[in-house]
Image 1: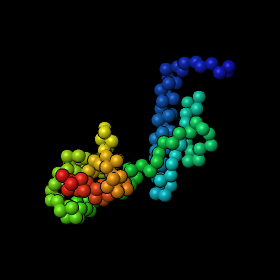
Image 2: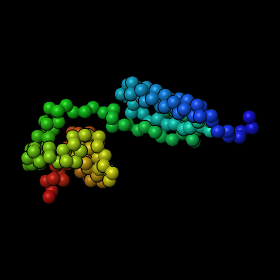
Image 3: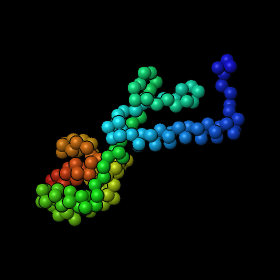
Image 4: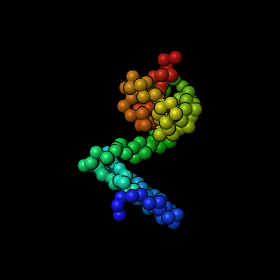
Length: 157
């Protein structure tokens, strides 16, 4: 071969797409099966000129780009009872009705701690990153931390 690109036959295109999908699915399965400490690592990937996808946690080539960094989906969710306790605790601390916090959570995120709006608001109470920083919320995806910051905003109006 002299390095010229030839179009792939139609059957080959489907097999290539299937192979890429299989590799990606396998990587995702392996990533979720890793111990918690390993899942917090940063992973890198790149696609070479032949279409081969390369993954590593130790990039040794400038073509590697970061692809995963502490995904919120690996974190622990609160049970409904724990969520209710957190709502009650933070409502009492900020002298608000728990029903108000539940209504805000329902309207803003529908009780999805991983919700992210188009504007960039994150978590149950949909805190904007700059607001979360101002309220000393360390992890907006953490329901406990997010609910702790939200009432501070509600109580300031």
